Structures are given as C-alpha cells and as structure tokens.
Length: 242
Image 1 (cartoon, helix red, strand yellow):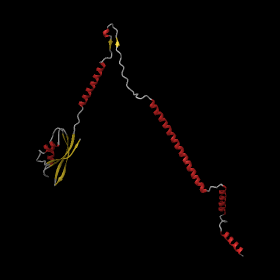
Image 2 (cartoon, rainbow, N blue to C red; image 1 turned 60 degrees about the vertical axis):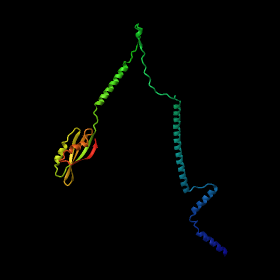
Image 3 (cartoon, rainbow, N blue to C red; image 1 turned 30 degrees about the vertical axis):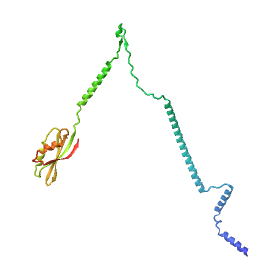
Image 4 (cartoon, one colour; image 1 turned 135 degrees about the vertical axis):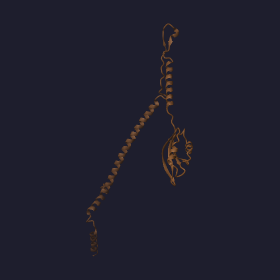
C-alpha cells in the first residue's frame, strides 16, 4: 500500500513537469552540455553576434594600423631627405658669396711713332667720368627745378558763423549784406540761412572758407562787429580743417 502511494506521487510529479512540451529546448541544452564536456562548444546566435562585432573591430584596428604605418613611412622618407639636404649644405664651402666682378680696365695702347715720350696713350681717360658727373648734375638740377615749380599745399579751414542781431526788428537781409561785404584775400563766403532763436528773433548762420595763413576768426570778428547797428555778437558754431 505504501508503494502504490509513492508511485502515484511520482507520476503526479512527472505530469506537472513541462519538459514534454519544451522537449526541443531541453534536447539542445543536453547537446550543448555534452559538447562542452567533449571540448566542442556550439556558438549561439548571441555569441555569434558578439564575435562578429569583435571581428569588425579587429578589422578596423588593422586598417588604422596600416594607415599609421604608411604615415610613419612617409615621415621617415621626408626626414631622410631632409638629413641628406642638410648634409649636402654642410659639405658646401662656407663663406662663398656672390660678388660683383670688378670692371676690367683696358690697358693703355702703346703707339710706336718713334717718340718715346708719347708712347703710352690712355684711350679711356677721365673724360667718361667727367661726362657721367655732368649728366648726374643735370638730372639733379632738373629734379630741383621741377620740385620748386610744384605748388605748395595751402592749409584751409571751413568756418560756420552765428551772427546775432539786436532784436526782432533788425533787417536780416541788410545784416547779411553787411556780412558779405567783408572781402579780403583768402576769404570766400558760402551758403547761409536764418535760424530761429526765440521771441521772434532769428540769427544768421553763414559758412565761409578761409586760408589759415591769411584769415583767422579774430580778424573776421573784428571786421564784422564794425556793423554795430545790425550785429550784436558773433559766435563760431563749427570749425573744420580742409
């Protein structure tokens, strides 16, 4: 009776196992076990993928190694050429420089006319030197004359003046006429306009160009303030070199 109970429990255990449904997987596991015991292991798909990646990396490293080897060989060849060049330069004689050869002077011609005193006549005497010196001096004189005829640079300035009247009853047309009546060497009047100041009063803003060596702001102010019936004051609004 006890034996039957034990047998029934064993069958029940086998009935609950899934080995019969996954038999192929267990067969593969058993095969791998025995192959491992015999020293021949079958590579799985995952191991195959890892080995393939390893092979690819090794090939990449081999290509990189070949490239580096080629670069090293090229650098070695260039270094060898440079060493040969330096060695050839060191063997060349030091201190060799290109110098201009001195002109060869013609030897004096000996004329045999029976007179020993006039036997030596130098056909290439000092006449050539004198001629060269004369030409050089002529060129220097011509350059000096040309330079003296060149017009000198005249310094000029542009001045913007603010001319203020006494009040709003001042005749601004007459005021501008008085301003432009000032004429002197080196002075040129330009454009003008009336600018409101306030309370109906306008000032005359006029531009002029002057030569710095001949006309200054002090002279202009002195001449313009003579028209005291129209002009109250004069200010320099802008001053620019030309």
